[in-house]
Figure 1 (cartoon, rainbow, N blue to C red):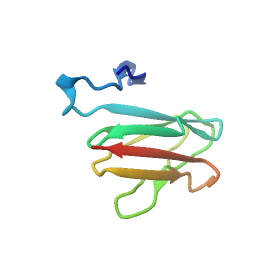
Figure 2: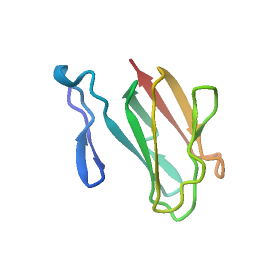
Figure 3: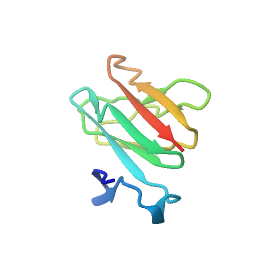
Figure 4: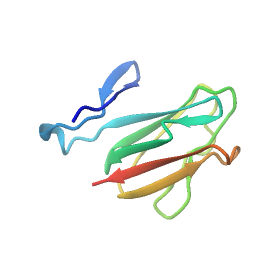
Length: 109
């Protein structure tokens, strides 16, 4: 199965997992631009890292409520924030400043 490449720190990271790297964690990027998260839904594996990159002119947050959720606090324009997702589940997140901005991360085993 082929995956899309994500640019992280100037390097392309392949989001597909081969049989040899099934245990290796991956890094994925969610871009914030134009008052929206992109992609709106992201599938990752437990132990993967998700980087939120704010390319917008406004500060934003990425907040998934719940005991195993996450909260980025403020991500300033041009800034990034990352989290390593260790628990399987669906994590719906939104920007606390702009609640109409929503996304979802599906963490699989």
